[in-house]
Amino acid sequence: MNPGSDYFFHLSKDHRLSPILKSHGPFKLKKRKNPSLQLCASIMSQQLSTKVAEVIYGRFLDLFDDNNPSPEQILAIPAPKLRSIGLSNAKVSYVHNVARFSLEHGLETKQIQKMDNEEAIAYLCQIKGVGRWTAEILLMFTLGREDLFTADDLGIQLAMKKLYNIRTNDKKILRAKIIRKAESWSPFRTYACMHLWRWKDGG
Image (cartoon, rainbow, N blue to C red):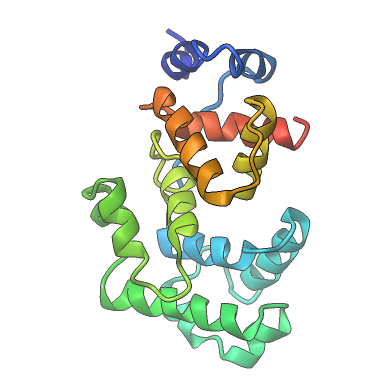
């Protein structure tokens, strides 16, 4: 059986989603190391275009001798230096918060993998500057969790409104509708989100 075929077969039962899956082919989730660094990257990308976020993150990595700075190294960079690469005062504080939390409480992959999705989200959201969306993205793209649905992601909301012809501008009603629809995708909701993001972006 080809990698990804389990999720592909399951999601293809959704007749609206099936043509998108076939046009993309199967995706494979990749796990990444250093969750604290990936969390910092997610914070930096908040409310920015992908291109701008990549530039700022690249400048951030250039502050270090390698591309895998430790929490200690991140905390050692003074706030003015972080502001100079394009981070707002708030994001400078949030990045330092992540590094400090990692040192004081732990953000190791093995530690977080012992938690289920909701436990991990609650744990990560203790960090000021980390909200549910940021925690969900970390679980998806750093820890490789297969069954997460980012109901508050604007791209997912717009894609599902278009694909399923959902006609409402009420945020609460829209959120409830897409969450209910996504239940049929479980246990592979992360993959559905990946295809919807790509579809929305014209991929």
